[in-house]
Length: 112
Length: 115
Image (cartoon, rainbow over all chains, first blue to last red):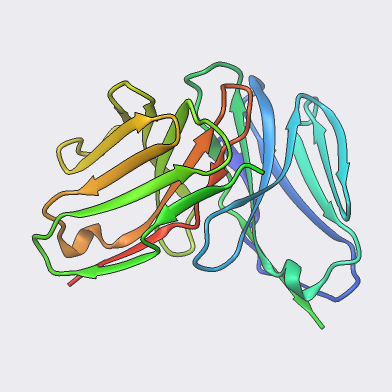
């Protein structure tokens, strides 16, 4: 079993839909949780960064962390065609030498 | 804020050539920089971690003599692929981080094609 599981999709939704993206993990020591967006042939762009449990909102994006279930989510409201990209979750333990553990990424297409 | 610039974005060269890729943090000081490799439709694979002024720490299976990393300042790290061969063709991405509790910010990657 991988440390981080993420459904690769593809996920296709109509413009304006609410998108729900998820990752599950097995390591209870993970403390930092991130969502990145990656367009084709570009580097990942940080969308959300959360420490420990709870919700965080930034514009149309909401990140949720449920440590008891080892489950994180990213919600995109009023999705736009420009949101079409691959969404990667990443997480790490506390500590300077801990590296990011990545999900495989979910490919999202928002259709106009 | 937190902009990372990577150069070049695309390079094509002959087998046996050495190629240098630069990674700069433009608006912050990066105590740690990271180098990743990404294959098509796969996630990022960490190659090495470098702290300013120290030798890089390479992940298992990554040849340190093949992939030379220099992190000479708090805003610049370089990756040199020495004597590159077609199997080294890939998408190389750098990231930079201000401190341990901060997230990594990524450059736009370098597409390396070895003929």
